[in-house]
Image (cartoon, rainbow, N blue to C red; front, side, top):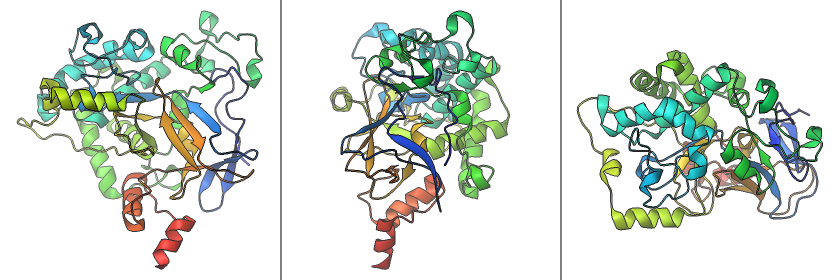
Length: 383
């Protein structure tokens, strides 16, 4: 058996005990690390709820959703960033670490993307997500990661609200968006260290192994960073490529409870200047798109992409016993979709399970560097 690397102090914001209580880390032959049911679990059991480590809206939704919680902002011009005129933030997210990071490290880059400089556009979602992660990396390197208890001193320490912190506490961080999300239910808050522990596909072995063509694509995307990244967040080309690999292998496409409203808004208003900027091409070579993410079930059109290190611990199965959805705080919620016996592995779908075996595995191999050998794929291959 394995143990979680995430600390129960600060990494968990709990009002009802340990958010990991329904799952147990394990080692599964042929798969490696996995999560299994710690007890018999009825259908609809909440397994984990994880705050977004980093998330951004797709370019076509930047003008209608908050860049923090990815919820609709409507036509309120006060939500628009006065610096870049592109990003929108709700009142809560404007004062959160996401809003502060945008103003400090991302605003200038969005301005350049909106102006099509160097042939780049708002539609390069992978670059915008990488910029967000680089901002978090800078904060972590400076010893100021809000979620990392090892980086907290004095007034920044989590405040236990009448609960034992070793068993999961009702902790308050200095991030208002995280605090607002934790009011609804138990919440897992990942650190940059958790993100670093994810596979990148760049080194092979336990780090995973992306194809040469996939790594070449990530390298080309990484080269565009020098035109966009804030000078204080700069890193080596290899670092950019490794971070992009982690985003590709562990990313999730995000839907919200209000995705229908966003889609309706876009269809009624049509493409505005920003949305059009995502598809227009000027002189220069645009960066290739690199990131395809784990797709939630339910048929809702995704509005953004993000990474949730703790949720990435769930392996894939083409006949999954769990599913992921997203709440009003852009947190990913993983629940069982059928009865699961104690000790049974808990799996989610990484791709559309309605596709045939060949199509599913083509996507898995391209975007997640593995082919599936689940019972369903084995049966379908024999036909």
